[in-house]
Image 1 (cartoon, helix red, strand yellow):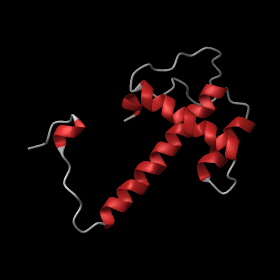
Image 2 (cartoon, rainbow, N blue to C red; image 1 turned 30 degrees about the vertical axis):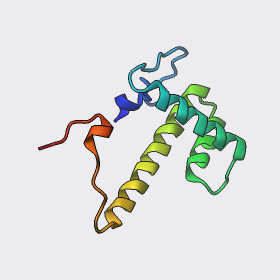
Image 3 (tube, rainbow, N blue to C red; image 1 turned 135 degrees about the vertical axis):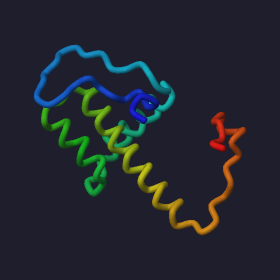
Image 4 (cartoon, one colour; image 1 turned 60 degrees about the vertical axis):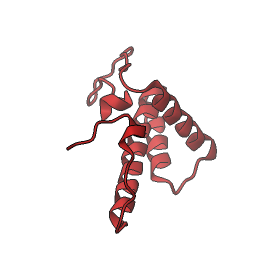
Length: 108
């Protein structure tokens, strides 16, 4: 899922790299949307929201802009996916998915 999002960085631990290219794999539209969402989090600053708390902590640690925005985008997507998964698990008869409209192949 990381590559589809195109949001993984080649950074680990305390390694301090000044210029490290991010991946250009994945959907540029999703990347732009996620960065817009993170921008809204920064403008609204909801103190009780875990994604904003994470974003603000990384920013206060002095991380570069792209690093903390990418990390917060990843956290947002993990939380969003978990909420959707939990919601779909509560449905007794989930609606069928029209695989033709998704562009994906059906597993048969």
